[in-house]
Length: 395
Ligand SMILES: Cc1cc2nc3c(=O)[nH]c(=O)nc-3n(C[C@H](O)[C@H](O)[C@H](O)COP(=O)(O)OP(=O)(O)OC[C@H]3O[C@@H](n4cnc5c(N)ncnc54)[C@H](O)[C@@H]3O)c2cc1C
Image (tube, rainbow, N blue to C red; front, top):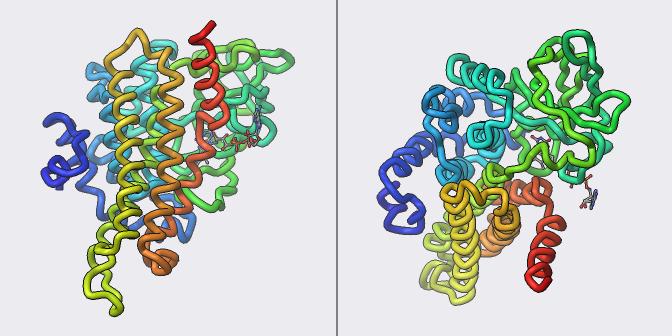
């Protein structure tokens, strides 16, 4: 499979290490793809997929080598997550949050060192995973800078946190979370490392159009105690954006949606090669309008992938310039998520009415890619950023 991909479209695999990494995911691919339909129909969390990924140490890959990881590069993360999403978008997006956060923590070392090393140990020794829960009903996307309604109140030896987080992806299997909360009575926001306890409840609210198996339920915290060493940092509300300065790790998001689109493209191309209605003397792949649609899918897929991988590679190599890549990172996300929506749409047009049936994964992919529009960074912010950059050139 890898050999075939190397010769064909997947020329983004550059060396043996990357080939081996992709091979690892390839090993699960067909099983995850088979389970995806059931989890989507039930809206159930794919616990088994995560067990399998943990069994091969997938969740440890981004950690530093001296702490038991493999120092996954951003390029490699994109490669793996895209491949995972070709099998199951929900599993990829959910896993991507943990993988991206661990890559981000390794490259920024922005957590207090003792907290970081002890959590890495939990990942390596106890298969711990993590995600950030920032979204809330009143703030909407945290990228807008709204004030969290979740509050953190100082106690003698720590903090008491109460509130509700929405869109809490991975919540069914996590024992550790990063939670943002307003410091009670102040215009400051803190980031806290929270351990699961009986003061945390999950309300199963995640019944959505797409990405139904990500377990992105509501997380309710009721006077949850966090010791002083669980405080990651506090910033003024006006500087809330500085809680996440380096956004390279968010490329796991476009990688996921492009992976889904890539799978839809494969299905459509294979279908077109085989399907021959009795009005034709050859499969529909011989028809000019079908070839035209396939050509257009290729333009979008190859353009978006080229941009995504080139930005990831630049981020890996240009360590000092990472912060200035924000515009390019946003552009890659914008192009990938919109291309994904358009590619799945074209794939369904090629297949025709058969694409509407649930026994084919295309209708699930059509719903799943839609969610990309509502993951960060948001489209209007990306476009504004691009516009400002262009206008600044002439200042
Ligand atoms: C599949 C999936 C998984 C997710 N996983 C997580 C997760 O693990 N952790 C997490 O914290 N979040 C997660 N999210 C939530 C995500 O980050 C957003 O918070 C959520 O999708 C809401 O964003 P929104 O833009 O639709 O909402 P809102 O911010 O409520 O926006 C609604 C509308 O109003 C506009 N709008 C609102 N405020 C402004 C403003 N200030 N300026 C301009 N326009 C504005 C928006 O453009 C949009 O059109 C996930 C989302 C999805 C879809």
